[in-house]
Image 1 (cartoon, rainbow, N blue to C red):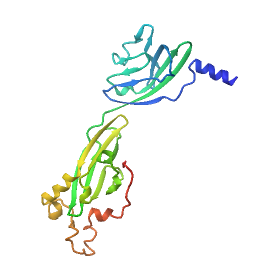
Image 2: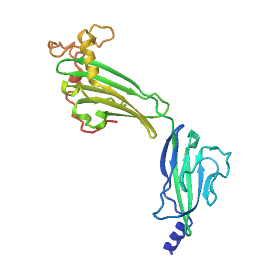
Image 3: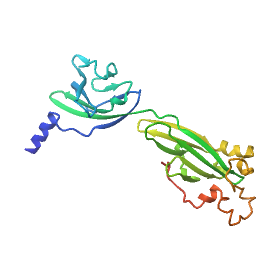
Image 4: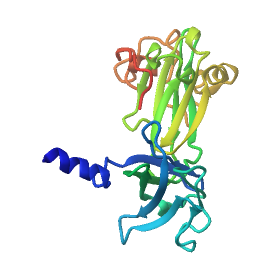
Length: 275
């Protein structure tokens, strides 16, 4: 019957679940640990590896004689160990260690359990390149931009949070660039004492960089800067304090708008993070 056929496949390890996804950092280590039913007693376990190209090789086994390596001179050399009867630890990870690791577990009295792990090894995330720029600072508003860019070879995600994620980003007027690397803010004095963090990450590693907004906003009040002297070399043309700025003419109205004026009509974002 169909039930008997399924039972036979289960007993002889022919039905396999989807591989468990595991991420590791180049030079680090990972622990591949099968999940077994409560009360299971392991007789023997065999670990295999397949990179997707070439044959599947057996890399380790654990039985009555303890931990053994069928071929100690394979690509893993001395980098494999089994801290217990089932788990496999891979140390000093290399990019070539990415692939599928299979565990065939023989349980008392006569059961066979097959599980697999799909390991992806990533390079560590370098510290991102960051920059902050004060655009305007008045008694009522502090307008600034924060930039955060990944510097590594691989693809990374950029995420912004306020006060380490304890508060929502949308409590302030904010505008995020399409690529997620530049955040523009228009802050009132009561909200300028916050810390925004930029997180650059891949599936295995991340780097977090904080921005002290109060310090950035104060720096504009202590130095002349572009806002107080718009003629300074490199400053945006037409930048003027809103409280002292007369009604601009039609020729100067567009370049004279502040960041707050540009994003004032944007709806508030109540999400905790922006990616």
